[in-house]
Each structure stands twice: as structure tokens, then as C-alpha cells.
Length: 264
Image (tube, rainbow, N blue to C red; front, side, top):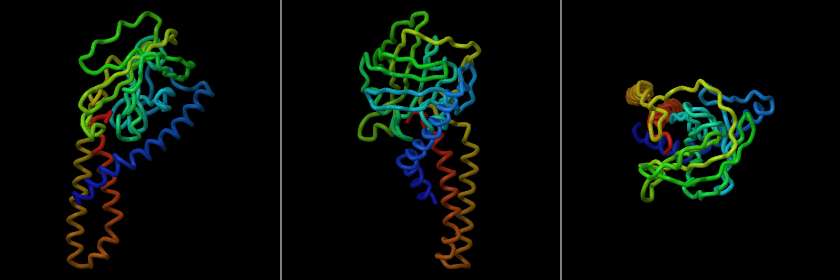
């Protein structure tokens, strides 16, 4: 049973996660395009978590992604996430957008390739803004110059690791700073802070009770299978138990991956 869960974790992170991300992006794109056309797309300051808030295009790295509201590990499975206590991309202020580096499509896997002057296009409910990259920085590097009044700043945030499994061993935060000279108005009333689970490189520890429940269900399933094999043949038992085990393993890994760093 432990081997089944471990196998599902790798399958989820390296294969099924990418498929789920692509499906989520297709649905989010259709929803966001419809909301923009109907003038119902969100402009802030408070947006439901998981709702699409922007379309991000970076031609230099062949990136087009719908940005969702929220930066918890579970939120970033659908695509890059907007940090809720910052303005929306393109508005007057500094907006932070986080994205995964390797799993679930790894949308921000190549942001370190960006160079000063590269274009980042953002489409939001208020219109379109074109940002120019200022530079790439890592933890401890000097911050860019303070933002001028009326300028929109965009910070793309992700992580990188070392070695052959760099994408799966994120250890250092990486940021791309960009600016647009003309900004949209930003409504007041944003949250002053976000929970620890929505910070860069954080996991959702709040799911631990749910994980314990899933693991208990797996243990119960294991004991039931052992007991059933005393009465019926192995083939009969596994024909009946396989769908249940697969469902429990899937549910367990869905919860388990939310404990991993949100930008992994």
C-alpha cells in the first residue's frame, strides 16, 4: 500500500499534474475570456480564490497562462497565482504573481532566461498593459529602484534548485521584476497580509488532518484486504479492492502534494 501511494505521488507530480494543469488552463481561459467580454471580470480588491484574474503572455519564453487568485499550493496547481495582498497586474502598485518551476506544467520554469527589455503582456478586466523586464534577482540580491508614482510593477516569483533534480528540489527563490509606465487605477481594500501557506515556498499544513484521515482509510483498506484474503482468492480480492485502493491513493496524493512547496 505504501508503494502504491509513493508511485501515485510521482505519477501525480510528473505526469497527471501536467494534464490536470492543461485542462485547468483551458477552462480558465474560456471563463476569463467570457468574463472580459461581458465586463464581469474581477478588478479587485477582494477576489474569490481560484478565480481567473489575468492573462499573462511572455513571447521570449513562449509562455501564455491564465493567472488565478491565490498562491497556496493547491491554487497553483491550476496555473500561476496572484498574491492576494497586492494589486492586480497592471494596476497602480506592485503586483506579485507566483508560478511553479517544475510540477503541474511548470509554467515559470524558464523565467530565469528573461533579459532586461523583454516584453511581458498582461490582459486584465481593465485592459492590456505591456511590461518591460528590469532584471532577474535571487534571494539576497539588491532590490530594484523604488517604483515611481503611477507606474505598475510586476514581480514574477518562483524557485530553483541545484543538480539534475533541480526542478523537484527548489531551494532558492527567484524573481523577475518588470514595469509598465501607465497603470490602471487600483481600488482600495486589499488584505493587509496573506496566510503563511500563501507565502513563497510554503506548503499547506492545514491539510494535515485531512491527510491523516486519508492515511487511516488506506490502513483500514489494507487490513480489510488482508482479512479478505483469508477467505477468498487473491485474484478475487484484488479485483474488488483495486478500484477502492486506486481511489484512496489518488485522494491521498491530492492532499499530500499540497504539503509540498507551492512553487515546486
